[in-house]
Length: 315
Ligand SMILES: C[S@@+](CC[C@H](N)C(=O)[O-])C[C@H]1O[C@@H](n2cnc3c(N)ncnc32)[C@H](O)[C@@H]1O
Image 1 (cartoon, rainbow, N blue to C red):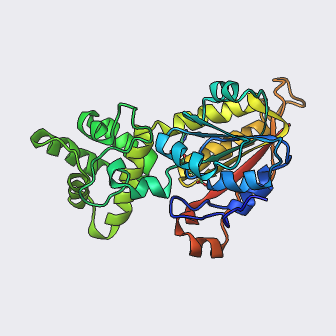
Image 2 (tube, rainbow, N blue to C red; image 1 turned 90 degrees about the horizontal axis):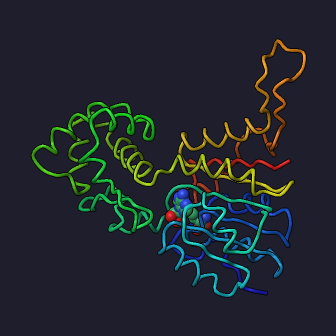
Image 3 (cartoon, helix red, strand yellow; image 1 turned 180 degrees about the horizontal axis):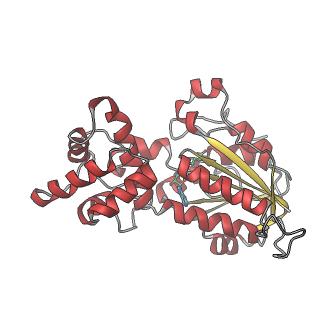
C-alpha cells in the first residue's frame, strides 16, 4: 500500500474539505476522474490512494509549475495522467488520456497557497511585488496591463463585479489619474492608490477585493468556469458527479445557479397545466445547500473559511 500523507504533507497547498470531496465524488473505485485544478496534488493524492489500479485520474492545471510539482509528488501512481491547460479543455485532455466519459469532475477554484506565496507571480498584496497575476506564465495579459490600459468604466465594472468593492469608483478614478504620470507596475503603487481612495478601516478588505478582481480578469476565470460547467453535461456518465469548491461569492453563484437550472430546466409559465418546452432535468443536487468546512478545519487551515462545495449528479 502506498503511503498517503494525511491529506496535506507540505506547505504547497492544504486541500480544502478533503474528506467531503472524496466522499461525495468517488462513487466508483475503478472510475475515471477529472481534476481540473490539480494544484499541489493534495486532493489528487487522496483520490489516488483510494482508487484501484484500473481507475484513471486526469489532473489538469493551467500552471506548468503546479503540474511539475504534482507529477513529482504523485510519481508512484501510474494511473495519473497530467495535462497542462485550462479546465474547460475537456475534449483535448480526455483525448490525450484516451477516455470518453467521466465518473467525477472536481474543480477547486482560485489560486494555491504556493502561487500566493511566490511574490514573483504577483498574486499577493505584499509590497514590492510585480503586478502580474497570470496563472499561466505564457498568457499575455497581466494585472499591470489591465491597470494601465482599461478605461475608467471598465475598471469600475471589474472591481464591482469581481471584487464587490464599495469604493470601486474612487479607486478607478485615481488609477486613471496616477497612470498619466507613471505606469503602474508594482503592488506598492496600487496599494498607495487604494490607501488614498478608501477610508482607513476598510483598507485591508479593499486590498483583497481589488487584487481578487484583477486576478479574475487576468485569468478570465468566470467565462472559463461557465464554459466548463456546460461541458460537464457532455462528458459526465449517468450517475457521475460534478463537484466545485468556490471561495468567491460570484463563482459560487454561477455554480449554484447552473446546478439548479439543470435540476429544473423547464421554462414554461407557471400558469400552464403541463410542460411544453420539453426541457428535461440533466442533474440533481446531492444536497440543497453547499457543504462548508467545520470549525476544526478552519482553525487548522484559515484559507478554508470561505469555501463552499456544491455537488451535482448527472441523470
Ligand atoms: C486551489 S488550487 C487547487 C489545489 C488542489 N486541489 C490541491 O489539493 O492541491 C487551484 C489550482 O487550479 C489552477 N487553476 C485555476 N483556474 C484554472 C483553470 N481555469 N484551469 C486550470 N487550472 C486552473 C491554479 O493554477 C491552481 O494551481
